[in-house]
Length: 503
DNA sequence: CGGTTTTGACCAGCGC
DNA sequence: GCGCTGGTCAAAACCG
Ligand SMILES: [Zn+2]
Image (cartoon, rainbow, N blue to C red; front, side, top):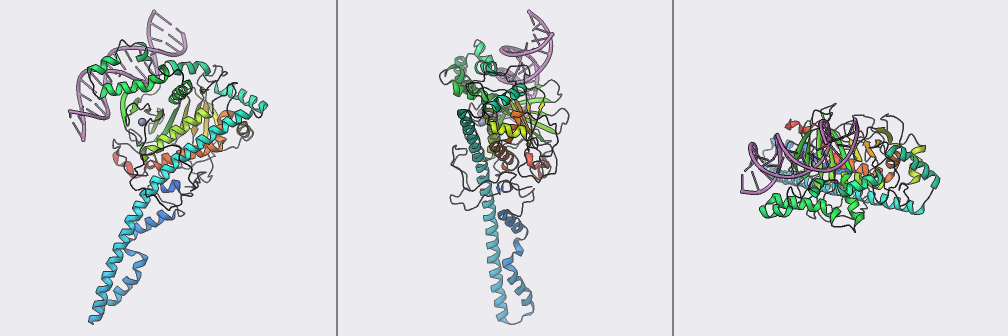
């Protein structure tokens, strides 16, 4: 694995804008001295299944320690003495040997202690790095958002932007106001909202104070409140709904029924979707009451070894580190999708014209864009199924297909934070699930690079975010073992290796 | 017994 | 209006 692939995270940790974790990471010492430079991915890797890089001194040490605990360098002297002392007949020598043995034992104990310490440090590092990933992504997202706002404020290169907008119009073709309207009024809870005769919430509340009603209530609140009770906070509700609409899809090869992402999910439905004989399962996050996050799990029709997991929404609760990877990924991707496609009041795209220009002018940009089939929601797809091995480009990032859900829908009037509804398909190549992620810029897809798409991926912030996201998915989700999601799930990064036990 | 899964029913949106 | 489809609900079954 190339180190960092653009994710050389400085140890100068950014201020923490969000409390991603409950401050209870058990092994998290306050004065943890490790330098995280360039080690994020490796540090989060599973030392049982993956070879670690030499530059990760910390882990290489632990690895060798593990293998040679009894042959540690500190013991060489003693072992030598041991062999010499065999033929001794003198008591002094006996004593010496005894002493040496004691010393040896002490040293061995010490080695064991150090091993244990290394182990715990490693875990700690895992925590730190996964935490860092999340923060990094969030920071990058914030930076980019600010940047875009700045750009819009400056109203820079108008012509360029017009051009860009034109291109985006051709490609993005979002739903504009219509979508906005829909998402605000009747996206999710249409059923409940318009036929309250079916199940009155109060009635249900009265009937049983049990978990279900509580859950339903919370669930209703969570989704209804923004649209019904907060007309004033239009923007936030808009963000919510658009956020809710943004989807992040992860494709990974897995025989397991579900990808382990550290969250707790409850299945609430299953459908046979059209065009795919494999059923699609619907899950809802149950880590907190009323958490709006949902996901769909479905096998790819063409290749049933590919598991497509689509996330929707943002968690409304703190997450354990194990869940941070995927959650921050989806969150970051969704926010990137949002921020990268929101428009200013004048209807122009809030995208950095320079980035766009760069993307347009540089067909050899790391990211490729192409159009693909329509999709009802703006979706970022992280494709972990590619197995290309050209993995030497650190900054290489992925292919990106921008999809337009409704090709004929006019694009104008993107006010507020409405989606232009591009479906952004970010594909990145991982060398293998075994060794982790290896991004490649050489995936030669079509070159009809969509401007907006290319711009998104050409954005260094986006790159950072995506890189962090990917690293989180690949290396972060197992940073700690307290993922008690034991439903035969599988971690994407170890699909081929040690976790074949649940097949 | 509480939480999860299963599964048929229901609903809204959309195209015809 | 009708049928199709995706998404959700919720009662029953299942499970640890
Ligand atoms: Zn959640």
